[in-house]
Image (cartoon, rainbow over all chains, first blue to last red; front, side, top):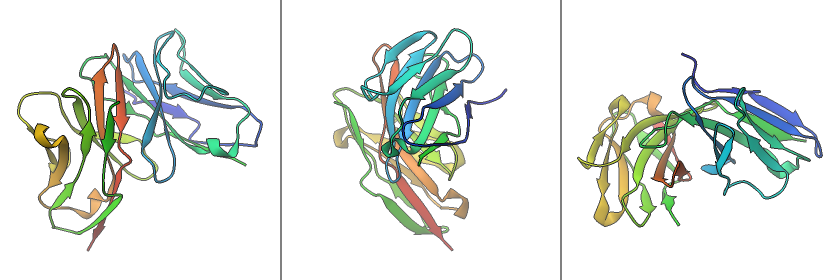
Length: 114
Length: 114
């Protein structure tokens, strides 16, 4: 039973390029969360998705960032026209249901913008 | 708005000594409280959680935490620290808003000296 899978582990992009981060939740989990972790900071909530729906995107920057969780396939966090300030570790977590459920985390994607 | 404060950015303890990591939260009602641990380059792993009932919660790896409503605190403790406990520890709070949005503190990095 594989855990939460994130790929790639490391992603290097030049300023202005697009970054696509993928997250496959644990089997049977239909809730996905994305967090961003900057050096010396905790995890900042970005977005919460269920299959084909964005439930809460209050932590997402208004521009350049988008997320989806299609009926089939992994959840995608997309960052357009990346800037150096986007460099961070991006973690995905999943849960089976909304009530009293702990989060299972992936190992993260380290995004470096040159 | 709900928030989580971990006053100590880093703590150093000797192996075999006791440990207490502090966590304070701000929330109007009793939230769901968690402690997670993150090893370098890894995602987060749940240590323990509190939802209701007994205010002293036992977790994995010999950790425990005590919920004190009057102090809005949920401090993590371990009677005897092992070198392998060196990691970053995150306190988190969640509430059911039709889905669970988990907010994390900034983390406390634990160093263990021989």
